[in-house]
Length: 219
Image (cartoon, rainbow, N blue to C red; front, side, top):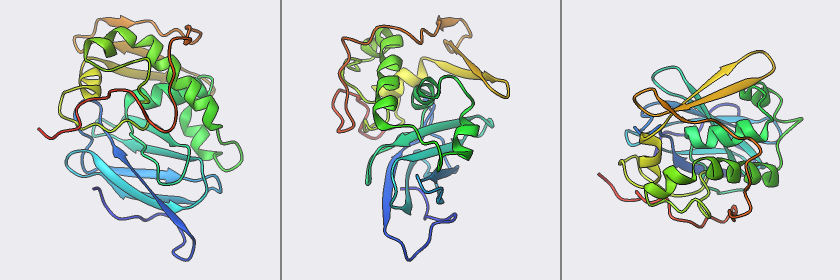
């Protein structure tokens, strides 16, 4: 799944492996995944043809991950604990942007060792993503009240969670201090206007998984 570890990780330290799928609907294949831990130690791996990857890094949670797709768009993810799943998608990027109060995520990555985001804060942001996209998720058979977009196992096979990604396009417009997101359908029409303060009372998600992401088979 993906390539070997690399970056600045010290081979004498205790390490952990983080695995996931990098996709925007289509798999992000042959791309370099970067991870930084809470001590600022970095490592890399390369995604496989199906977007899957495993990256090994020094043991110090939480972890921030990123990948750049073939169009030059950078996507981000997060792992709260060791040996966790950490998909990298527009959904996880939306959640981290929410958790980071709309500030640029590249700047967050640069200061991760001194200012990491707490797991509870990211989990609440993931609930905001689900609430905003609840209708789309439900239409694709994904339980928006329970699915954790960071940890849910899925394949880039146009089913379940991947079908949600297929049905949306996410772009970010960033200044030096703030970003805004645009979420459209594939034809360019507006899918939704982001609501950062949307109610999330019906959504119960955790870092241990849960929900129905679908699309875990091949194809």
